[in-house]
Image (cartoon, helix red, strand yellow):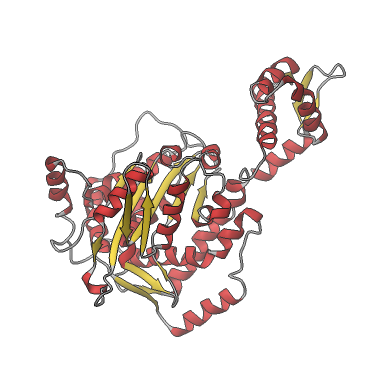
Length: 434
């Protein structure tokens, strides 16, 4: 393991390597943040007195298909983080191969990182975490051992990992974000698994539709949604190329050595000065000044300080080994969180919509797409075909059309009422979003 850092800012250095990437810069940045958060894990924390805040984060990169969500994970996760990891497997060849890799970047007495890539069920996750849980002697007390079962999950497609029916997984994820002392996972077929020191760091890619449709129904009320930082990109699509320059392998090797160095950090993060802590207390006394007022963000705003502390710890570790949060770290964390908070209402807007509301939104979008592509209104006959695929019975059709016209989401394009155009209200919504 390198005894000295090669980069003064790991996050900036990681994102600068892939400047020519198809992935938007904001996706690259938050993927790098996730890598540091996973490298720190449960063995680092901020002591808030009656509870601790650990650096692990739940980050979801939200964007249209082909916008570079999976590509954003390639460098920090696949080409860097993975090379410091040991898989949970009985295959000796795989274990030897992993060992020959991670021993280049971490010291012999250091526990390798853990990574689950793409598909893993809740039961498999419970088995893995129960196996990797280990005691950290430095923080253990007589009769009170300190356990660590830190693990990073990286999934390019949100629905591969999360589904509406995965209610037990939702509880495990929630407790692991809080990094509670233990979690008892009960399965139908394999019995119980007591996970000691659960700490999950999670990054995923999702389309706006996946982000909503794959979540459990009670995700907002059960607390998982408020623990997620949705990073929405709604900017211009990248220009596609037939070839993208290869990454600098020497820089990648240096980034691996630095993340290995960062993964050796252990202990409590503290404020640089008492004055900074007083400044943060004053900020919290004012309600942490939630910048976005939206009903679906109420839970997130309640945990805003925890989100910001997790981000501030990652930023601090990106620069230094001292486990100190200085004012620059804190202000940068506020700035980066605000950057994504501005678009959170847009990322969350479809949560809680009724079945009819979702159908209406889809049909209004189809009318808009038809109008934009054909430069003419949509025939009512085609609209009915699309509507009948979404409603339970033909008897609902006329009421659905009347509702959409009354809400000004669509309008009749001719007196005979045989063609539909986008309504004024739907066009207005598109302008606000864009």
